[in-house]
Length: 201
Image 1: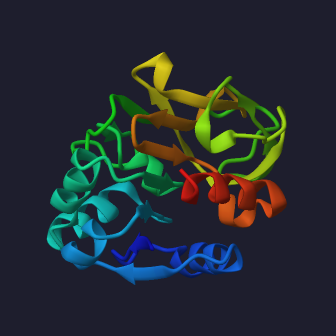
Image 2 (image 1 turned 90 degrees about the vertical axis):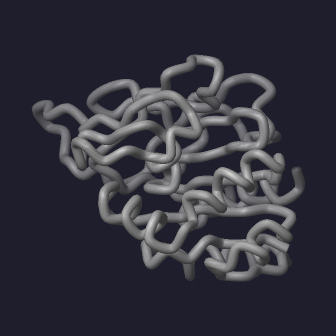
């Protein structure tokens, strides 16, 4: 059973659809017991960092996420769900993130010929022996929609990178915590393979 955390932030249905396509049992919930009794947990997200943190806290889901991580249940953050795992974001100065992993979320720098938000397909450089990229070819293309990017605090947490105006940490992996800035549920066969790797951990 895969629990998708419901905190009123975006792309839940497309994530659910991708998992159902893979033949998984899926529950969309903000119930603590249901989340903690699931085999895998996904935190999706589209929208603003500060609003999302406020929602997580108002539903008490921040505490549930800490419990998921402590219990070593495989956890996947997608897009804004990746950003919330870190300490802070340029998007909402003064608002603390979950701080599960060290690092910060920065605005993509302005550069001639570069459009922000970054919307579209970019290839990723994948580190060796990364579990959620198992059997995913190097330089595979995945789909991004974002104006802010991760600068991870620990190089060893970085699972994949991409270049768009700057070097972007596109995915992370640390113990049972996984996250990607791109949208695997919108990244065609490659994205489905990444989701399949996660649910098969």
